[in-house]
Amino acid sequence: MTEPIRPLSSKTQTPEAQRGYSKADSILFQAWLILFLMVICFALISYLLPFILTTFAK
Image (cartoon, rainbow, N blue to C red):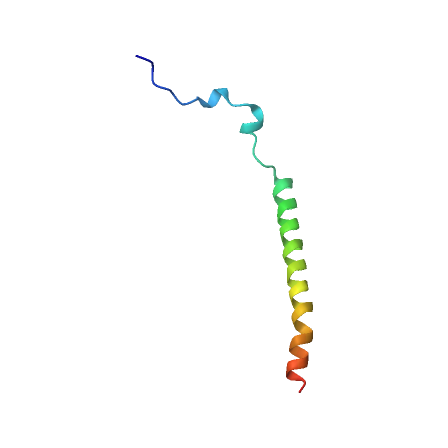
């Protein structure tokens, strides 16, 4: 009979797998996310603004 498979211990992980995200990575991601959302909101506003102005100008 064969031995059951045991899970790998945490000591066999590579240093890249143990490394977490740094504070700079977090700030950079949050800045990118805010800029992305601002672009989406600006595009939505610039798309809807002419429609709203022509609807209520009558």
